[in-house]
Amino acid sequence: MNTTTTITNLLKSRNLKKTTTRVELLTAVMHYGSAMPFSQLQQQLNNTDRITLYRTLKTLVDKGVIHKAYFSQEETYYALCGTTCSHQVHQHDHIHFKCTSCSAVSCVYLEEAPKFTLKDMHVQSININAEGICKACMTVG
Ligand SMILES: [Zn+2]
Ligand SMILES: [Zn+2]
Ligand SMILES: [Zn+2]
Image (cartoon, rainbow, N blue to C red; front, side, top):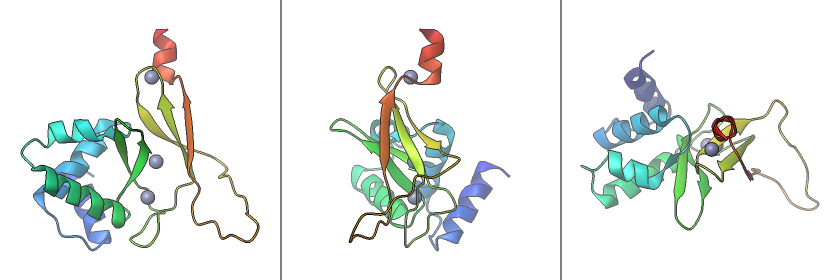
């Protein structure tokens, strides 16, 4: 399946109209490899005005298509959601790993998802952020 077909199906499954910006944005995120920093998105979608870009990101996050993988003061990183996410709930049983050397952020899937209960509270999602040196940087070093 090519990228366009994948994106068309993805938007359809979330009841979203296929717009140029949505397709461009998702294509960029898919091709990026790791979680995509907002500044990179802005660069690649330089024909899209800022407000449209923000609005598109918000819609795609709300509908469970992409998620904020990591955010710091300087940058927000976006990654694609898996099939466990829907327009109702984001369900991520994975860790977000940020490389302190190359700043790449990736979604790391776990064989066994961490599960715990909190007294008197209902856990809806668990976010785990980890920092360190990624495989590529370790190989170089
Ligand atoms: Zn999600
Ligand atoms: Zn790295
Ligand atoms: Zn993720």
